[in-house]
Image (cartoon, rainbow, N blue to C red):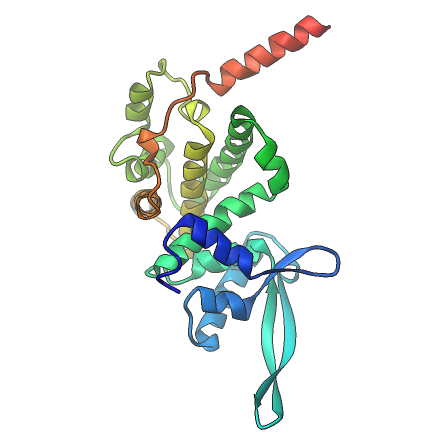
Length: 279
């Protein structure tokens, strides 16, 4: 399995390959099959990860049974005998939480985190709809998600003891952008003073930042971080890990991604102007 999962394309094929659909066309994954893909050999160990994921689900004010459905299967144990085996039907979101709570030392866990994080965020619209969007439309969509993500992250960071939010976010940028702060990124992109850097990113760069944001929030919650220093360090570590994941996958580093010719604010103004001409 380790030799097979060497790229995000193969990762997608692997996780999509074990996906099932129920009689209503709703997708789900079987925990036992996911366990094998994530390189866990013992159910007892994997079930501990599932329990942590269920707790995260609960803490996010989600209904656990909507994402983790208990099922029982009769499996052969030889000589014509069978035994009742516990399993779960997992939603995509449940798989995402399991990947978050898995053994981060495993390369396949990092790949699973990337895959399910991006796919879970995209699930707000269908994948077919998303694929039909133009690059600018994808930018608007991902930018909206980062706004929601940053709002939620700020609430969690505040509970963790963060007071200087500019400094807190710069720690995340430094990890992801190889030491660059928000100001450094703005200067490299040639932006005006106080111009929003997220409004001047392409969809791929926004997705990388969205992953950084969501993973940092989960880390703050999971590790019950309660000091500004530890929160800053956690943000940096997550940013660095996202960067390392992109590197392992052979992706383009975020600072090397092209800056769109027009910011989202410019595109919004153009859209409003065109609409005003119609009336």
